[in-house]
Length: 401
View 1 (cartoon, rainbow, N blue to C red):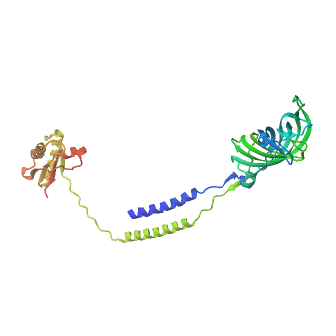
View 2 (cartoon, rainbow, N blue to C red; view 1 turned 120 degrees about the horizontal axis):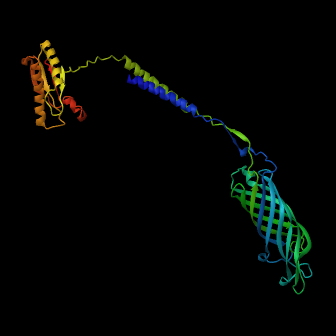
View 3 (tube, rainbow, N blue to C red; view 1 turned 180 degrees about the horizontal axis):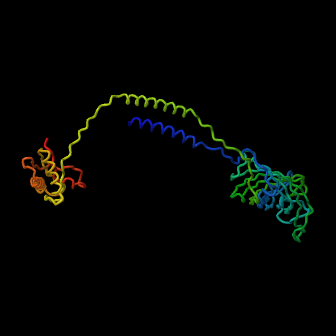
């Protein structure tokens, strides 16, 4: 019987594992995948404004110029831009930087002190507008990632400027900044190292090279240029991320070979269990003869420490006496006391007195004394523990075999 139950349990376990495997299959999900490209946003999205400040160092080619460390001057810009895709964008705005150079005597904007190489130091402001086309290299090379912190972009553009300066007389006096009537254009290229602090705010280092078709620092030169470095802050407004196409994510097909191997192992185990079951069912059944101990004719119970019979016990023993007389057989009365309470001497006396009390009552009800004998029981009658000691305080009446 036990082996049959074990076989049923093994089959249920195997089927349960199969059902669990079916219910844990992943369903197809749909997510945005930027690697598949991006969808163009509305025109009002992906705009930004950038403010930057830094330094500029301009130079001329082929003529005398101020020393490198003496050519640094402040510069600043303010742009409004828009990204037309995660890669390409356009920005334009206001640009300003100072030029420091040298010039011959008689030129506009002379400062009659601290001559350099026999020439006069000059300083002017270049103010104008500039526009750039930007290309995000990381989005181009590595694919668009909306949560990318660092972005590397390059740009190229052009700026148009007019200049203001101070004109000094021979005594070094000036009447303030004036229009220098000097205009030029500057092609420009640069690199932007941007760090996104949030989806709307970013800080960047902007490194730029500029050039001009006419000297920004000395009127006698035909080639000039400059190096500029800026720290910038950018605020992105409206929608800043780019939507991506929705693609289906299909779970990988599970390798069924391990399941096949488990099924084969389970089949072999089932065959083995079936063989064991068949052998068990064909085994000869041995007859088991159980011996049942015959119960006493009657058991009379006593309270703790008591050997006297009460009125109910006497009535019961009257009925027992009638049965004994009708049977004509002899009986042994055994007195019992629990071993958990009292001393050995007290319990021995209780056993003897309880047997004698029952014998006396039976004789009083007409049972011949010759048909009765008494003895004291050894230990406990039932010995079921201290919780059931009341069952050991009794006297039993057993037929003599």
